[in-house]
Image (cartoon, rainbow, N blue to C red; front, side, top):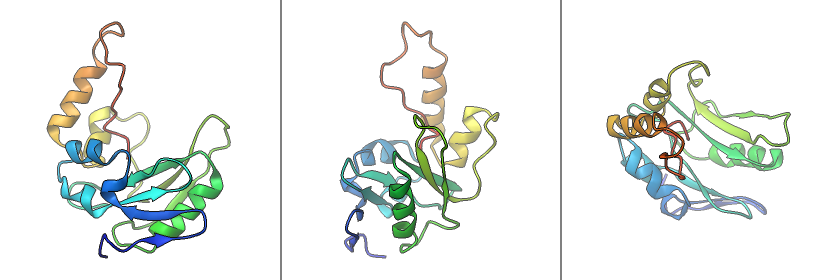
Length: 152
């Protein structure tokens, strides 16, 4: 699909990837930065977030939403573009936890090491090593800007 093509609905829109708030962050960390360009910014009333398709080493992904209706609408929209196989909504029964739209293979189990998650989501070896290095720092010297390679 041409990334200039916009998919819209009354409440939700798919925009070109560079319009996503987190586009540069993903592009800098992915083993294949072109996957960020192949993605889409999912926009509701708030900040557009990047949905990165599967491909290359990236086997799955997700985007989080505060409202279940937003997650359901995002699943419908992402179903209209290539790169997002097996779309599903993971509903959260907790008020302080976001609902997610997931695609691709199921993510590793929660007990797996962070490096396994980073590899699953297609992050570069450098991005994974950087995350692990930051995670091993004591809290007093850790960055106030946590960057998880496991984020979509």
